[in-house]
Length: 622
Image (cartoon, rainbow, N blue to C red):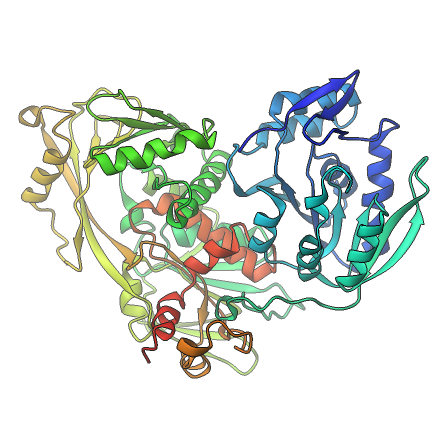
C-alpha cells in the first residue's frame, strides 16, 4: 500500500492523484455535521447502539465529528470506514493543525492509527466508540464486510474525480450491508449517484445542500439486497433475553477463556469461568515466559493474513491491559533458517510494511525479519492478573450441556454441580479434541516441553529459528519447544531438554547450559493450522441440508447455516495463542453483540468450525 500524496494549497489539504481537495474550504466540520452526522438525529432516540459505515475515511473528519456527538451520551458507536490511500500521520497532524478543530481527538487518532497494511484494523477508540479502519480498494474491502449498518456516509472524492468509488457494484454492496430502513447520506447528487441508489433498492430524497451546494442526497433502504455466497459460513443469529443482564459461561481459564471473559464482561454480560484445575493457566497458557509474534507467510496467504490481524489486535489489547511487569514490547526476530523462509520474508519488501516488519538479508547466522511490535510476556502472570477481576470456579471440569425450553443452557460438571447460562463458550485448549470428538472438527493435542536454563544468551529481545530463546527474567531463561502430536507424558524428559538446546545451538554453547527446570504443556491444533473460532454448527443440519454440496456448491439455492443456539468456541490456537486467542475473544464478541466482524469475511470462513465438514461434503464424501 501507499500513503496518500497530500499537498497543501494554503491551509487546504489537496490530493494530486484525484485532483481534488479533502474538505470544503468553508468550515468543513460544519459540513460534516450537516451532511453526515445529522442523519443520526432521525434515529437517535430509537436505539443505544449504532453501526455507521463510510466510504472514504480521508482525514477522519466524519469520524471525529461523530466522536464528539457520542461523547458522554451513554450510547455506543461502531464506525467502519474504507480507505484505499491512508493519509500519513504527519499529514494528518498538519491537517488538523490547519483546521484548528478536534485537536485532542486528532492526536488520539494519530496515536492509535494502524500500520499501512491491507485489511481490517480494529481500534478501541474509547469505552463506547470502536473504529474499524479498512485499508484497501473499495471493491476489495466491501465483499469482505459483514454487518447491517444504520447509516452509510458516502464521502469519497467526487464521482467525476473517482468514479470507481461510486460504481454500480459499490451501491449493491452498500445495500447488502444496510439494514432495512437504514440510510445513506452523501454530499453528491450527481445523476449516477441518484440512479444507482434507486437501482440498489433505496428510496431517494434530495435535500438542501450545505452552504453553496444546492442539494445533497438522503436515501433510505426499502428493499433488501442479499448476496448468497457461502451460506454454510453465514454468521449466526444470537437470541438473548435482554430484559435482564445476560449470563455467559466460559469453559477454560487459559488466555483464550480469560480474554473472552473480558470482552463479554465489558459489554454488559455477567460472566463466569469454569476451570477444570485448581488454578488459572495450568496448561499451554502457563509458561514462565512466552513470545508474542505472528506466523509470517507470503503477504497474500490467508493463514498469514489471519495471523497478522490477530497479532496487531493482540498487541493493542496487551498494551492497554498490561504494564512491563507482564509484557515488554522489545521487538523480536524471526530467523529464516532455510531458503523457503528467506523467500517468504523477502516477499514483504514490496508491501510497504516497514511499520511492522524489517527484513535483513545479511543478518547472521541467517537472514532475519525484525518484528517491531513483537514482545516477550509472562503468560501465567498475565492470566492471574486478568482473573483477579473475574468470577472463576475451580475444579469444575465440563461434562455435558443441554438446551432448556426457556432458551438457557444447562451445563453439568464432573463434580456433580451444574450451572445455567445464556451464552456458552468453549475455550478448552487441548481438551477440545475429546469434547468435540463426535463432530467433524479435525483437532489434535500436541505435547510441548520448554526448558529453563540459567541466563546464557545476552539478548534484550526474543528470537526464533529452529527453536526460540527468550530474554532472561529473574535468573531464568526459557528456550523451546518440542512438538509431539497426540503424545501424553506429564513428566519433563531429559531428552526433550536436550532437543531444545540442540535447536538453538547456533546461539549458545550447549556445553555451558545449566538446566534449572522444565515445563510440559498441551496445545490444541487443527489440521489446517487455523484456530477454530465462532459459533458451534448444527451437525445434523449440515449433513442433511448440504449432503449434495458436491453438485450444488455453485448454486444459490443452498439454505443458510443453522447453529447450536448461543454456543461458541475459541480453540485450537496452537503455539501462538497469545496472538490468536485475542482475535477469538473479539470475534465471539462480534457475533454475540451483532457487531461488524474484526477480520475479513474470507478469513472468518477459514476459522469456521464447520469448514472441515464443508470441505468433505464439497468433495462428495458423506
